[in-house]
Amino acid sequence: MPERPDLDDFLPLPSATFHILLALTGGPLHGYAIMRRVDDLSDGAVRMGPGTLYGSIKRMLADGLIEEIEPAPDDDERRRIYQMTGLGETVSVAEVQRLKRLLSDAAVKRWSARARPEFGS
Amino acid sequence: MSALDQGSMRMYSLVLLLYPQSFRREYGDEMRIAFAELRRDEPRRKVFTRIVRDAAVSVPRAQAEGGIMRSTGIAAGIVAVAIAIGGAVTGSFLTGSLIVIGGTVLIVGIAALLSRVGSRSAESDYSRSRWPWWAILAGGLAIFEVVIGAGQLIREPKKENVFALGVVLVFGGLFTGGVLLRNRGRVGGNWMIAAVGAPMLMAPWWVWPPILGLAVMLGAISEVFRGRRPTRTTAA
Image 1: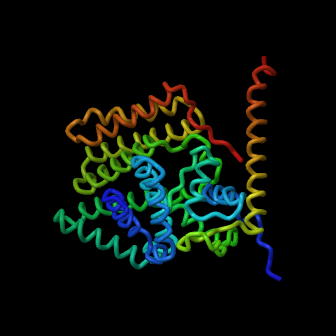
Image 2: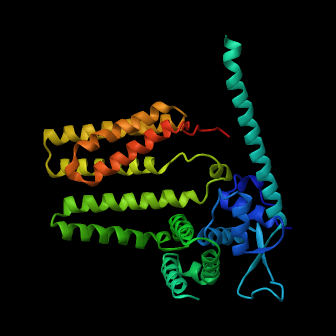
């Protein structure tokens, strides 16, 4: 049985990897559709180009986070379609948890920083 | 496809040549399709900035992972050729080599920094830049000054040049301190960076350094007046 990869080896996920996984949450997509989906999901904060996209796809395929699937008969055959693997889903959930913790820590720190002068006065 | 589209596709094909051959073979066709669709869906100016930023980040990374930079022999060869050209052009192997080595180290350093951009975690895309354009420009200016100062001292080892290099190093220290303070959310850091740019304005005969110095000062000061607090470093 293959050894289960350690999640900590993947986290924190590079921004491009995380956004590609988020884009693939809704189902399999081809490269350009991933780019557009990332633009929408991030409200334009992440504007990925083809080099970053396919560089990330190459690494994600090697890591087993995504896989290539056969295109549907009516799809453009020059395009390759990618979907998230089980490992990809687990890793993206873990990254979301990490970001949530980060936000929560930041909120607590901000609150305590604001509260400090009141306690001191 | 219009002549304009064909022209832009030819330009993009030239950009693709910057990627390693194996990467182009694997993904080149799909990247061309994605580019054509971007051209269809977005204004030309937006596509241009997207592609330039993308290439600046992804080419060094792709080369580092599977291209020429992976081969130590070729990288060493490039540096050796750069030294030889520098020496031949300037007629002095010492000065010429120093300039070319400095330039090569600067370019490789910038490429390494850019290649790291692609591996930043997601939170960095939603927070303000820790390295705005003007801070990167200021860093480049500081390195330029140190390389010139060191070259001058090696060429003419006299007291005045030791003093000049010392002054340059003090300014470099002030700049570094300014960046550290700014990244901790202290506005004083912006003022320190702006102060370091000021002496550059006193040497208008250099043309470019004063212009870049002015740009750094404006960038640092405008951040203060826009009411944006510099980015605070957050511990995870």
